Length: 345
Image 1 (cartoon, rainbow, N blue to C red):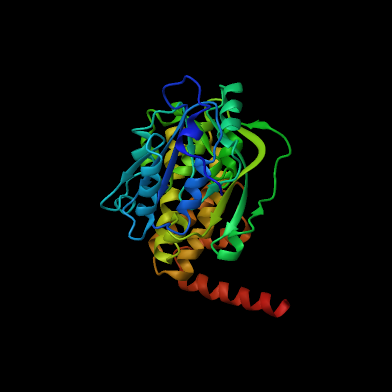
Image 2: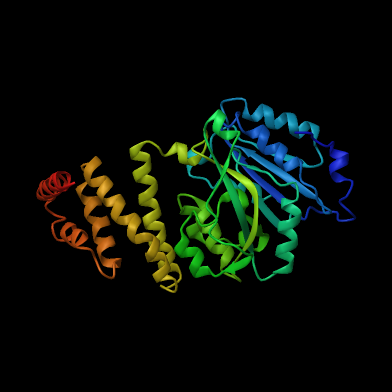
């Protein structure tokens, strides 16, 4: 990819003194990807100034050195934060480190393993949001690529759910879950990050909460254009970090509790939509714990939540609920039913 010099990038920026957009990038141990990510920022063509702030969370590979190389070459555009101790493992919100020093009216998010593909992305997304000032968040289509050298050369489009530009209301965003919008497509008005509610800081991952908070004012603006690539299962990603069963259980359990906290915070205003996401997740997590861990107390708690929020509990969920205090009996019945299913199949 041919890269412009700093002077060439800035020559069309006009008379604006402060950045209109802050590009927010958090990275950790992503030496394989971070250069491609940074280059996708630097290829942006805008008629307004933008800044790039990269937060490295004490990487132990060459990630920080790569970031430093580009920061030295583009000192008027790239700002950096280098941690000496890993902040994510201490429960700190990664984005807030950047938001606290950002100057842009809009915040564009892209983590260190993803990248943008359209040099007009920032220009297009900013213009669209100015056309719809009631919308404090926007997103667009994205390709996906696996954590593989060959696959990464040929990213494939995610199935398009929408065929035209439109605004999705808060209830649709909530019911869609965390994958309704992909992180490298997000642009927020900075109003979203001002006075964040406490439940944002205790959520296990802020992406979904930010989608919800961004859509509260006037919905989420969808732009019918593919302008980014999302890398699945990349080294250094949060998804990779929770592959261990214990970490996965802890992560998903925290999400269940976060959904309930959000529901209480808004006095049940969005209960139907929150429960739509929570029903399936809670039942699945309870069964995962049941078969993989001997945590009877947590299993019973989750089954009770799943049963209470389900309008019409399935016969299987009802069985699990009524026999939740007899795990050995449940395992026996489940084993028999599984065997019968195999025989019939």
